[in-house]
Length: 234
Ligand SMILES: Cc1ncc(COP(=O)(O)O)c(C=O)c1O
Image (tube, rainbow, N blue to C red; front, top):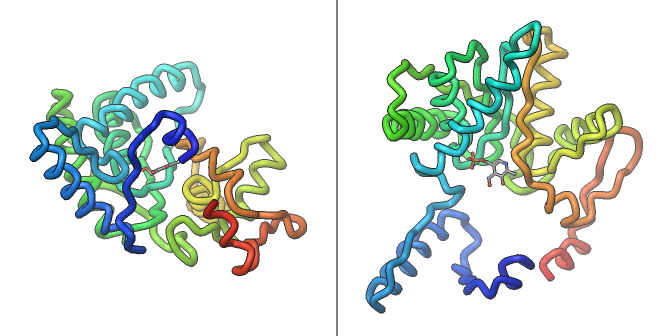
């Protein structure tokens, strides 16, 4: 928000708590701008379009180049899945590069079945845009890691984030990467992961400094009490 304000962006709020209200808001503003003779370029939530997914097709080729020098190829590529464009791009990218790894998305917002449909559709459309003819695998989306809700840190996610910070010096954001890492760690501990894994941290660093996630003890982060959280809105 600070950067948006800095750039003089005209930010509109829908006034509704449901995130889906943004879809209708985008359509309304698009119509308003068109009526005023402007040429808007509507971007849906998450930038989840076939064109948007091409960024991660490109990332897959970059990853393939990095992995080429590894003795043992990874069997899995893990990431957090929200609006599904990232996973779709990586899935189409895996087809393009002939990667042996399974692209595993851990959903942090939508139900897994809805994600699978979205990823399948977006990956096929991105592949067609990029001229990728190779078959695309069925999306692998894992559920059960959202916690209380989208955007809210979960105890499992924060424990995983603290472990990774302490052992690797990598700080995972509480909304996306922390929850995906919690899923990966649990799968490893359950003995269901074999071979090297790639974990994609897709960003989210600004949320490390939002809210008040004070460390409450070894391996546990605590959410600020409800009364204190209003201050985050400033
Ligand atoms: C840091 C971060 N990681 C992952 C995602 C989710 O990616 P996607 O919406 O493409 O599934 C988002 C989406 O906003 C994000 O901000």
